[in-house]
Length: 503
Image (cartoon, rainbow, N blue to C red; front, side, top):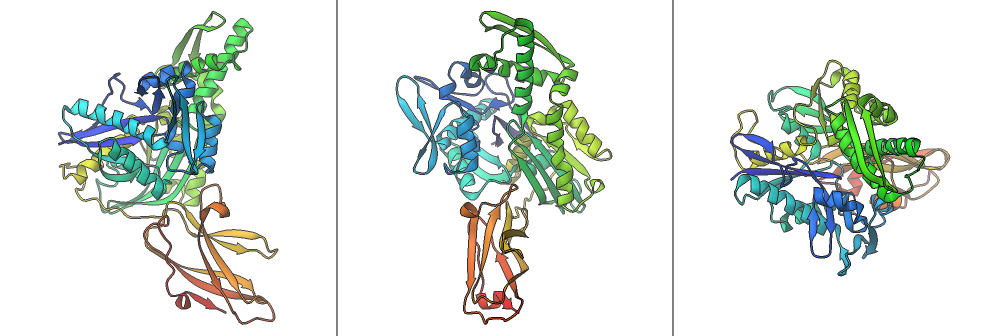
C-alpha cells in the first residue's frame, strides 16, 4: 500500500503519494497538480476544485473559499470576523461558532466549516486513489505552526469523515524540510534553516534549528495581510485601469467584471513566473466590450513592487529575533504557490547570497511531498536518503507571557516561554510587586505575533495572600514556572510553596 500526504492551504490543496521509493504529486481529474480549495453548492450537487472556482462568477453567494481560515475557531475570533467581512457568501453565528448560510434555490442550508473541509479531503482522497488504482487511505496531513489543539482535532476528524486513516499531523515547515531531506543527509550536523512560505492568503516565515536529524523552531512569523491574492488583485486593478484608459469605463464597482479580471489576472500571474509576458483577453467584459491586453513581467513587478517589499521585510526581523545573523542561516526552503515568482526569489537570494536556496520542487507542491515522505516513514517504507525513525518533539506554538506592571502602574507583558520552546519546560521568572500590599496576583497569557488579548488568551492565574507588609520599596518575587505537554491542554503549577520565594 502506498503512503499519502495531503496539504490543504487557504486557497489551494495538493496531494502526493509515496510509491516505489519516491514521493510525487498526483494530478486531479482536470489534469492539474494543485486543486483550488473551493467548494460550490448548487441545487443538486456539491462541486470541489477548479469548476467551483470558475463558477464563482455566477454563484458567488454559494461558493465557499478560505474555509481553513475559520476552521475550529469561535465566531468572535478576529480571523473569523475578517472572513465574515471578505466572504461573498453569508457567515452566521450558531452556538458561538461560525456557519455558512447558503440558498441554492431548492433549500436553505446551514453548513459548518468542518463539512466543507470534509468535501475537500474527499476530493484529495479520490485523486490519490485514482492515481494509485487502489483504496489506500493512510495519510499524513500538514497544519500551520500556529494551529491550536481544537483546530487540529477538527481537521483530523474531517479527514477521517472523508475516509482517511490519519497517521499523523505535522507542521508545514517540517514537511517542507523533509521534502528536500534537509537535516537528514548529515544527522550529526547542526545548522539553521529558514522556511519561507508565501501562500494564497498568508505569509509564514520560520527559522528552524536542525540538530541530529531533529527540528526545533527558533522563531516564526505569520502575516495574514499579504499573500498571492494580493498580487492577483493588484494586477486586476491595473487591468481595470487599462480598460478605463481604452474605453472610458470604470469597472471597479462592477463585481462580476472584477471577478473576471481577477480570474484572468491569476492566470497571467502564473504565466509570468515562467514567461516574459502574458496576454489577457476577456470576451464582453463590460457592456459588450471585449478587452485584450498584454502584460510584461517588468510591468507586473512594477505594479507589485510595494507588495514584494512587504513580503521580504519580515525575514531580517525574524533572523534578529532568533538571535542569529544572516550568515548563520545555511539553507532557505521556498514553499507556497507565490514563492515561485522570480522577482521574489531574487530578493531572497540578495538577502542570503551565500546560502543554498531550495526551489527544485515546485513551491506549491513542496509541503505535500514532505507529508508523503513522513507517511512513508511511519509505514516503514524504505528510503535510503532518510532516517527510518522519526521523533516528534512537542513545543509551544505561541509565546507565553506574564502580566506585570511598570513604574506608572500600566500593565506590561513579558515573554516567559517564547514560541517554539520544547516541552516540558521549566524557567525561573522574577518580578516585582509593591511592598505596601498584602496580596499579589501573577497571570499568564498566550500571545500571538500581534500581541495579547487578555480577555481571550488567559491561561493561568496564581494569587499570593497574607504577605507581610514592607514599609518602603518593592518586594522581589522569584517564581519557577513549569509547563508540561502542550500549553493548549493545561498549565501545571507544582507545589506553590516551592515555586515562589518572596524577598
